[in-house]
Structures are given as structure tokens and as C-alpha cells.
Image (cartoon, rainbow over all chains, first blue to last red; front, side):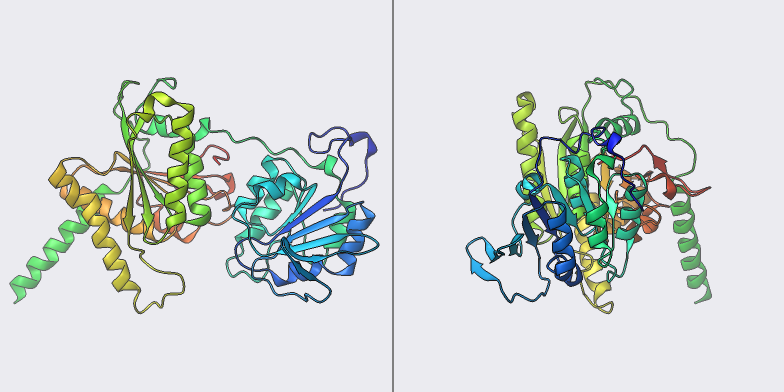
Amino acid sequence: MSEPLSPSQASASAIESPLRTRTNVLVTVGSTRFDALVQAVLSEPVLAALRARGYSRLTVQCGNSEFDANGFEQQEEGLVQTTENGIDIVVWKFRPSLEEEYEKADLVISHAGSGTILDVLRLPRPLIVVPNPTLLDNHQQELADALGLLGHLRPSTVSELPQAIETLRDSKLVPFPPFNGSRFRELLDEEMGYVDSDG
Amino acid sequence: MVAWLLCAAALIACVVLRLYSLLPKGTIHKARIRPGTQSCSLAVFLGSGGHTSEALTLVSSLDFTRYFPRTYIVSEGDILSARKAAALERVKAAVSPPYSVHAPYRILTIPRARRVHQTLLTTPLTAACSLLACLYHVTLCPIWTSAPLAEVLLLNGPGTCFVLCVATYFNRLLGLPSPRLIYIESFARVRSLSLSGKLLRPFVDRFVVQWETLLQRDKRGDYRGWLV
């Protein structure tokens, strides 16, 4: 998907507030591992793309992924790398809840797990998803493509990630609808014979 | 000998015909109309991880003063799902205090039909064990206590929920009260059904999908938009 620049649409979306400065990027791989994604986000092309867009802090939830930890220092919050020109990086494996991390982030780059997608889009935060091609049953790709087609997020691949970061315009993302509990409530009420919906 | 075989064949034919007659038809189900004040007991299987999150999101949308008592069914060892169910109950109790005095929920644990990475060779054994536990809760217990498991059972995968479906059909075969079965396919399934979805579609009373692309022609299914 290409995303041509359109300054006139910059204020059209609720996702991007003009007052908000971009600082934090969160990368999450979920409960297992995704070596290629973790390695890619720590590589120079992605870091350069992030710097170019003004991000200065990168947090990586790496799960059980393997990556080159050279140059990182073990600290209380995780493996930390502070670079003189650019981006501070923190890498850790798991946290009980990522909700707080999503809130702090100005951009989330994630595996295409449906739970993460729902949590991030509902906040809302701009989201780039990278489906893991090594998964056997790759329905994650279908979900990423379908939501990408609707404009709610930006699907990418590991190799296209720098380009996805550079060309993502938050304002062009379509706001994701809020949770609508009435749909299932009405379905079940109907199924169980409640004709009036308000009891 | 021949007579025995004929008897056995006739019996099997009867069971198969009975089962066939029990399968949900394409026609629209007309529920017995209930007054809004009447309660409805509810059971939901929490299949861990994403299954649990979606199932609890669905349950969270319900009127808890209407749907009670509630039974959360979790797999053995799935402490996280049990905790999340208890957390939802706490949240609901906090926002609607009147019902909290009933505190009408319980958590049932059943053995897994198949563990992750378990070999196919031993699966029949663990599945049988799981089925026995389900039969105990769905069929036997209700006979003793004359309180059915629930009037409606929500399923959304994975494997172990098939065993609950089998136990429910056992009740139907015997003419015992059985819960209505509702299967809700995951939001993550856009173009292809999950394995449990494919398995359960012919058997459940209502099959709900969250992407319209999954409603193939001539197959039963319901689409109401995204439910989670």
C-alpha cells in the first residue's frame, strides 16, 4: 500500500494530535518469539527511518527472540543501549501487561496477533503490523491485510519496515470503531427468547 | 451370530438417525419467549490466550442481572483464564452493585483434550478423559442435582470445546435438557475458519462469524459485524 502525502488531511483524524510530539516507539512480538522482527528493528535501516521521523526512544518487547545483544548494558528495566546521536533503546522479554506501554507509545510496531491489534487500535495508537511468515497457520497475514485494506493499520514485512515507517502518515489511518457490546448482547437475547432489549 | 449383528446394526442405525434428527436445521430458531425479568443461566468455555480474551469480552457485554448463574469452564492448569474470569466478575460487581449480593458464578475445571505438542498416539486417551469429565458436568451432575449446567453454552475454540459439544449431544440423544450451543469464530479469522470452527459448525445451534467473507453460500452462519 502506498501512502501519498496529503497535508490537507493532516488534521482529519483523531489519531494524530498536532500537539503531540513523537518520541516513543514500542515494538512487541507477543508471547513467543519473532527473531527477524527484533533483529530488523535494531538494525540501522529501521533506526535511521525512526530517527528521520523524529522518534528518540525505542522499547522492544522481544519475548524469547534471539538477537545480537552486543553494545547493550543490563540494567533494571532491561537491556539498555544509549546512543549519542539518535535513539535510546530498551529491550526486555515480557511484562504482565503491555497496556501502559501502549499508552506511552506514539507508534506501535507489532506482530499481527489479534489481541494486540485490538488493544492498540482502540487506544488509539498508530500501528504497523508485521505478520510472522514462519507461523504454520498464517491467518495473521489475512487479518493484517484485511485491516490494512480498511485503512486501520499499516501492514508491512520485515524487509519493508523502514519504508513503512517513513511513509506512514498517522493522519491517514482510519479510526477503528469502539467496542460495541450491543451486537452480541442483542444476538444472545434474541437467541434465548428475550424480545424486549431493555428487560 | 447373524441376529446379534443385525441387532447391533439396527441399534447403530437408530442412534445415527436420532443424531441426524438432532442436528440444527437451516430454519430460523424460534425461541420460547421469556419475560425480561426471567433469568437465564450461562456457561462459557475459556480456551486460554486469545480465546479467553475474546470470550470474556463477549460475556462482558451481557446483562449480568439477566444471565446468571454463570459458569466459566477452564482447562486444567489454565490459572490465567480463571483469574481473568474472576476479574471480570469483580469489575461487573463494582459497576452494578445490586447483583453482587448473588455472586452467582462458579469456575469449572476440565482436563485438556489434547495438550500442546502432544503426540497423536496418546491423544485419544486424554480426549476420552476430557470427555468423561464433560459428561460428568453436562450430563450426570444435572441428573443428580436437577440443575442443568446452563441454558446456553458459548464456545470459541480451541479443541477442548469440541468435547463439550459431544457431551451436550449425549444429553440430546437421551432427551435430557441441554444447553443451546453458540460458537463464535475469532475476530482473527478473516478468510478461513479455524479447525474448531470447521468441526463444530454442523453441530452448534448458532454459528457466528466476525468477517462477512466467512459466510459461504448454503452454509449456516451469522454475521453481525465485529463483536469484540
